[in-house]
Image (cartoon, rainbow, N blue to C red):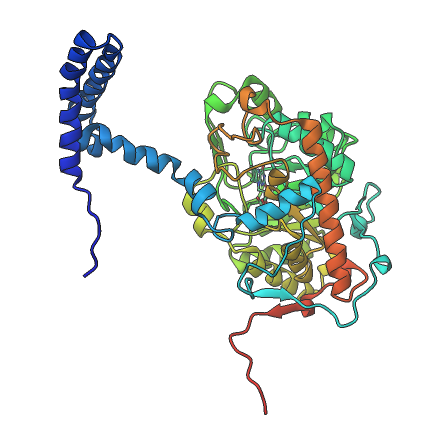
Length: 504
Ligand SMILES: Cc1cc2nc3c(=O)[nH]c(=O)nc-3n(C[C@H](O)[C@H](O)[C@H](O)COP(=O)(O)O)c2cc1C
């Protein structure tokens, strides 16, 4: 029979609690007869005894404290540092979530521009993904690779079309979810790397503008920054934002992978006068974001809303969504076809996407993951003969070149990442974005915590992360036998198979 050391908690707590009481006269006597300094222990034991009395007889919410007194605190203490102990001491390199240590280290190394090669062999059990990449027997020379370029708005012949020269974009993160230094570092880094930065749905992009990056202005369901008092589109404000030189595109967020179909509550205590003015809301009451745009009640009205924003802004306009019901997506595409107007791009955000804050069950249980959603969307657009009417961007844990190439193979024209860039800024995955206590000063407005985030240094890391990603993407593309990232297709993927049979 298995034998195990069992701690008799009841006996232990009785002994400890009695020991505390006995300690008081003992140390008092020592203080009196041996050395005055023992009185410090007398006082400490009196305080412990009082605390014990409080735990056992006054407080009500904690049963363990009421039953066992002081020693129950060890459980709470151990539980509270559990994530840190697991992260630093006990978790294996492939265990942590949402991102394993291997995946995070790859980002850190790229962002610091240090060698990210590994030795001896992969530490993953291959195949670690259902889809792996096929290389070619006849790789292309690196210098033969065609530099990436993608033009948004060309399908509509827009005058203010936007061409980008990197397949990577910084995905939506609002000032609000992030602190101002993080936003400024992202903006400065994006400018240096020549990539687009999405403002997130936080309203007027004051800090994004300060560092001079090219921006995608995001309009969430609450339309912060471009809303009327009743939450509808304020056309004048939208036209003003669209006329800012730095704003190259507008993105209408229908939903996001981490909390599809959910609005959000912004509690009054988080609405500083500055946030209220940037978002165009009252600082004196909680703000409830709707789960969808007031103007979008079905496929036809949603398509009409996209067209309205395009006409007002005269910029490329994209739509961001997480795939849910496939038939609704089909209806939406039908509506675009009927109105003969498509968004200039579509972002498919996988259910594995991140957020500043969302209910756990929304993160865990709702929405279609990116590598299931993307093939469906790509196939449907192709079947309908409309794939050439828009660009497709993918997001959802696409922080490293392997997963990014997989997304490009499955139809994406470009890749968004949010948390990849948070990691590049130094995020340690403390999972505290919703508590204003982010230890790395990224997802917080606490000046003490923001103090350590050096905008210039972190902007350089954003730059290196992008450049090293691009380098790897081009090298993998060459190894796969392609001169252009646009040549990648589902044919380049190897589907995990149980066993391959062998003919003799
Ligand atoms: C801190 C944080 C804030 C975010 N804020 C927004 C937002 O304002 N609007 C939005 O559409 N998505 C937002 N997202 C989702 C990301 O833009 C992205 O879609 C998602 O995290 C998937 O990309 P990733 O896995 O590379 O992070 C946020 C994500 C994070 C981590």
